[in-house]
Figure: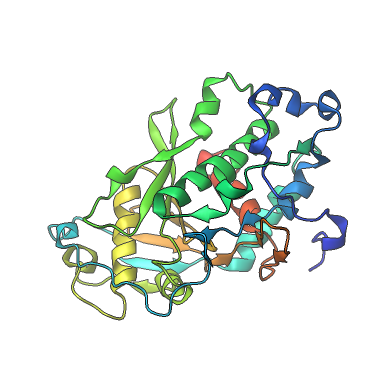
Length: 323
């Protein structure tokens, strides 16, 4: 596509994110000349384009993107039912992926020319073993999301001691939608100055949410007759109904922007005024790199990577850029 950078213009995918720098080098990180000889020097835009998520293993054996042939059925969770009229979402609409990627690409390409150093890390074992949802959430917080926060800090020339920096951090927010044996968890970014939620990320591990089920969830559809309140047994859309109820409960009257992910794929969404319509992208495949250096899974080209998309969507949610 015209105007899009070519892959050859970028370095190979970096193994670990910006946040892997030791704490005592964080301030020097803004000045590449101050940390001579550590990590790889590049530009922020190049890093974002080339960065990849670690292709972790579940229980030290299977790549977490490979789901078992038969997923464990989700529980009924009758406690999630609500009085009719509580959940006001009536329609899910697909965001055109090319409009989404074009807008995200424009934002990334207009970023200032910031020079950075990307540190290497010895924590291969830690990042290559996922033994459950808690481990997956911790890895997302300590690698990907802290990296996005660092990118925003650099873009906005923000001091690490600034109170605004605390608003860039994600925290566990399970209480926004609880259920017995829940197959999901929630990470929330909170604006501490205005005491409000900026964006929610609903995380369902890939061994609980297959790509087909994810695509079904993100497909355009209606929710007639208070469907999300009554939660009837519906084999075809059971997981989709439940996930939309989770998204609604996490966001309603708190924040319009959300992300849903099974780690290998990511969908970006927002609620319209009135909360009765949600717009969401198709699931976008994340670029993965094997920690033992065996190669990179170059995801289907959507014009913008998951990491670039996440930075763009968070900045929209913060009001840092116009919609």
